[in-house]
Length: 144
Image (cartoon, rainbow, N blue to C red; front, side, top):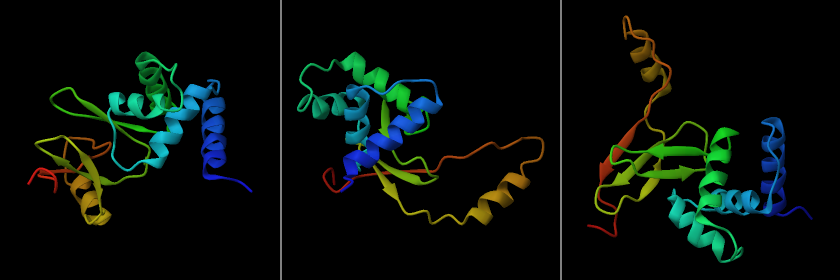
C-alpha cells in the first residue's frame, strides 16, 4: 500500500533529480511537513515541527531545504514588505488572505475569473505582465 508519505517522497525525489539535487532525510521531512499543512508556515515553524521527528536538524538546514524546495518547484516562498516569509507547497495559482495582527496566511477560493485577469494584462499598454499576486488583508478569527 502506498502511503501519502511515500507519494510525497516520490514527488520530491523526482523534482530534486530533475534539478540536479539529491534527496536527504531532512529535505524529505521538511517537504512532508509542508505538504501536509495548510498554515503557510515560517521557517521557524517548520523547524519546530520537523525537529519533533528529527531532533538533530538545524534551523540552517530547514532554511536550505525550503529554498531547495522553492528552487525545484515544489514550494512557493511568500515574501512580505516587512521582510517576513512563509512557505506554501501549493504551487498552483491561488490567492491568500493574511491576518494583519498575527501574520497567518490562508488560501482563499479563486473567485477572480481568469478571463478578467487576461483582459487586464492585455490592457496594460507598454507593460508586459508576467504574473500577478492577489492577497487580501484583514483579521483572522483568532485575532478578531
